[in-house]
Amino acid sequence: MATTPRSLPFTKASLVRSQWLVSRRLRFYIRASRYNDGRNRKNRVYKELGSLRRNIEEIVSRVDEVAPAALKLEQERKIEQEKMLHGSNLWDNLNISDDPLSALADAAKVVESLRDLQYKAEEADLINQLAETDVVNYNLLEQAYKASLDACKLLDNYEISRHLTGQHDKQGACVILQAGTEGPASQVWTGRILSMYTRWAEKHGWNNRVVEKYMSENGGVHLATLEIESEYIYGYLSGEKGTHVMTDRALDSFGALSHEMKYSARVDVIPLFLDKITALELDETEIEILPLDLEYENTSRKSSAVKICHIPTGVTLQSAGERSHFANKIKALNRLKAKLLVLAEELGVSDIKEINSAFVENELKHVTRYYMFRPQNLVRDLKTGLHMPDLNSVLDGDIEPLIRYHVELRHEGR
Image: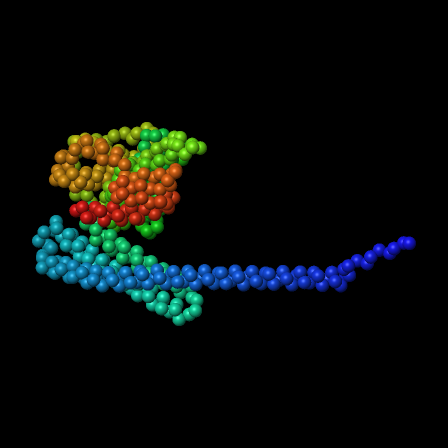
C-alpha cells in the first residue's frame, strides 16, 4: 500500500517565527555585549580618573612643599643683587658692568619662574576640585593633569639648575658626534645616537638644529654637529662626553654565545656661548688651518668648510654649516676656544698651554654608556652605574634619568 510522504515539520509561518526568534536573541546578545563593554569602559574610565587625581595631588603636594621656601630664598637673592647694583657705580669700570646686571637678570628670571610654578600648581588643584563636583569629567581632569605636569617640569628644571653651578653650565651646547672605526654599521649607529639627542631636545621644546651632517653611502653618519641654543644645556649634557657603544650578542640553540658585535660613536660636548663672545685670545702662530678629511667631503658646502687645529694641544674643531669660508672660520675658532676653556677647567690649569696633549687624545676614548640589544635589551651607564631596561625608549630620547643623576653626582663631588 502506497504511503503518502510526511508533511514538512516547518510551515512558512513557523520558519518566519524561527528567524524572528534568532534575530531577537541576536539583538539581545548585542545589547548585552554593548552593556558589558560600556560597563568595562566605565570601569576603565573610573580607574583612569582615580589615577589622574592621585598624580595631580602628588605633584601639587610636592610643589606646595618646595616652592614657597624656594621663592622666598630666590627673592632674597634678588634683593641682594639689587642692593649690590645700587651700591656700585657701573660706569667706573665698564669691563665688569655686565656681571652684576646679568646676575640680577638671572635672579629675576628665577623668581618669575617660581611664581609661574605656583600658579600652575594652583590651577591644577582648582581644576581638580571642580572635576570632583561632576560625576565623571575626564576633560577637566586631563586639563588639570596637563597643568600639573607643567608645574612638575618647572620644578624639576629649577631643582636641577641649582646643581648646575659650573663656570660654563649655563651655556647652550654644541654636540659633536663621530662614527667609530668599525665600518658602515658604526655610521648607522652614530645616526641613531644623533636622533636620540634631537628627540630629547624636541621633547623639552628646546631650540635645536643639526648644523653639519656628513652622510655615508649606506645612510649612516660619519660626523654630525648638533647645536642646542637654550640655557643650561651644556650643564645637562656635559656628562654625555665619551664613547657610546652598541653591543649585540647572538646566542646559539644551546644558549651559548655565538658571536658578539660592537659598534661605537664618539660624543663630544662643548659650550655654545649664548650671551657673550669667548674672551680667550689665541696666538695666531699656534693655529693651523687643515684640509677636511676626504671621507667627510660629501657635503654641498665643502668649499667653505674650515678645520682648525691648536698646535700645542692638538685640539681640532671644524665648521661647515655656514655659507661662507669666513663665517665657518669664525665658528670653528669659537668652538676651539670653548673646547680649550673646558679642558683647562677640567684639568685645573690657568693657562691653556698647560693642557696635556695626551689627555686631549684619550679624553673621548673612555666608554660612557653601553646600549645592549641582545639578549638584555637594556642600557648600562658607566658614569652613574644606572641600568635602564627599556633600550628603545632611551634611543627615542628618554635619557632624562641618566642626565639628571649624572648632574646630581657631579654636584655632590664639587
